Amino acid sequence: MKRITHFIGGKEWEHPSERYGKIFDPATGEQQSEVAFASPAVVDSAVAAAQAAFPAWRDASLARRTRVLFAYRELVERHKVEMARLLTSEHGKVAGDALGEVNRGLEVIEFACGIAELTKGQFSENVSTEVDSYSMRQPLGVVAGITPFNFPAMVPMWMYPIAIACGNTFVLKPSERDPSAAMFSAKLLAEAGLPEGVFNVLHGDRVAVDRLLEHPDVKAVSFVGSTPIAQHIYETGTRHGKRVQALGGAKNHMIVLPDADMELAADAAVSAGYGSAGERCMAISVLVAVGDAADQLLPRLLERIARLRVGPGDDPRSDMGPLVTREHHARVTGYVEQGVAEGAQLVADGRRHELPARGFFLGPCLFDRVEPRMKIYQEEIFGPVLSIVRVASYNEAVALVHAHAYGNGVALFTNDGGAARKFQHEIEVGMIGINVPVPVPMAYYSFGGWKASLFGDTHVHGREGVHFYTRGKVVTSRWPDPRFRGVDLGFPENK
Image (cartoon, rainbow, N blue to C red; front, side):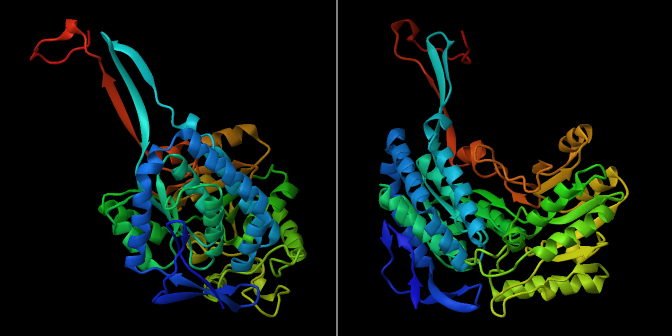
């Protein structure tokens, strides 16, 4: 059976592990490989390799760092179909979704290739007589990324290209459920000319995570995942003096006003609700129908849901693949049962959709007349479950969004420009779509939500990502001039 190990100091870790985790093919339910789990000692080895590589990489010219990133970008472009197949085999997502994930990651790599412009400081001449002031941004040192199972290629790419471009060294702890994309990336980075130890990959569970959070040589930690774990990452990391950005869970609403294009809205709701089997932090899980919008949408949604083909990700006929593990499948179906028990109307039961006999498959589920008190509304399900909440007015829809604990993403569908402008101004959510259901920003903007969807002050990638992985210095300088010699005990003044 295939065994996946760590990547430390420019090569695969050759030592046996005390513990291993199982990796399944979600489309068959069968184990296909196993992955080594890092002990605290192995974590220390990875951090030591990154720490040893930091001084030389910090001092490498911006031109050299950029050349490595350009070479890496070309390698990812060349091998993106191969990387997408790895995502399908371990995560289960369909081929088009997997390839789209790699392409969105490529956008961040391309953004990081502009690091020479992104880290430019400012200069002020003669702030006082013959005194100049200027600023610069410098790398932190060893930084770590802890990433989720749902985007095993893209989410790490939100982090390490920018961190490395800024002159840091990086330790990645990907999800133990689908670790191969991280290993593939490590090998491509090495082929691109990245020095040994600048990028390292650790596999494992909370043992590895907690050691990274405690390690004194790790200066910053980036995380994307569920809110309870994000809160743990943030509190533990900051308690140990680290800079932390921890992106948590979501319950993304899509508000549809009665004047909206209902065909467009129905297409968007089905695409955003069931794409990647709902295993997206930006998935639409609540459709807020204002006025009679629900009556217009419901038959359109059911018509589209009935046509969705659920099957293995490597089958080009499949629209939606399986859930990632047996345990996650049981969790999501448990929410479906809970929704029925709470009194919501299950108008499309994905358990009865035409499904393959093996694997962790669940078809698209649609609830109507969901109430805010219900568990299926309050909690993040992270599966192909869409809920319709009916409200009487725009103001009631906005109040519903504001009352929820999460503030990751939200969308408004309307043909009223005034309503859209009012909405984007007043809504208390980090990422907003106007007739766009999944408003994931481009790489040169930053990704992140508000409220319980973010712990820390900094979002990922874009300018905020550059600032997260660097710290500022301001220099005030004056070169020796005989006219300014002599002791002066007065308070310094600008002259």
